[in-house]
Length: 204
Image 1 (cartoon, helix red, strand yellow):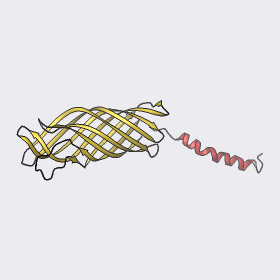
Image 2: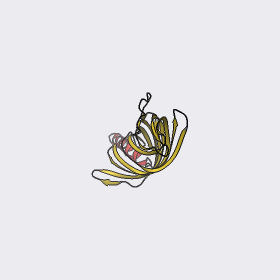
Image 3: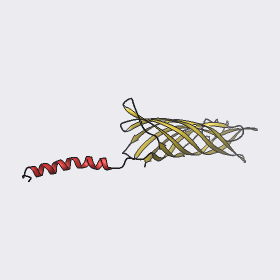
């Protein structure tokens, strides 16, 4: 029979190990994750037409969304290396600039959309991680010329980028990314858009 001292000691011991047992009983996160980012700036690499008053070679309303699958993590230099593969979609905001054409450079407003597949290798240490990624994407660029008329072109090209993330908990993470995406607006005008974005991801 427990004495009056043994019973409180047993209760305290149970209270101490209960949180550990609850944490161990929580299901581990799965290999799938999804995320989205707002592109606060995207540099187009285009050149303005001389005298173009409203020229802005960087668009400010861009975005990307992705669905990923992570493979087994590998211990590396005090952290873990985590390889993944992602399906990613892009939405490029309006850029006002000059576009090369068969009739010379013309002022216009360009946008693009795209979808791609990329491999990602992240290095995680504590709550922080750094990542690099590369793959291929299909993009469609469209330009409306200020003097009338428009063009639309498709392109398949290499995408790549780097990023940093901070895990808020076992499911949610914040991300700061840079992505380079190839875009073709017409037969003469091809460029690479550098998108800087801030977003979040959720691991299922």
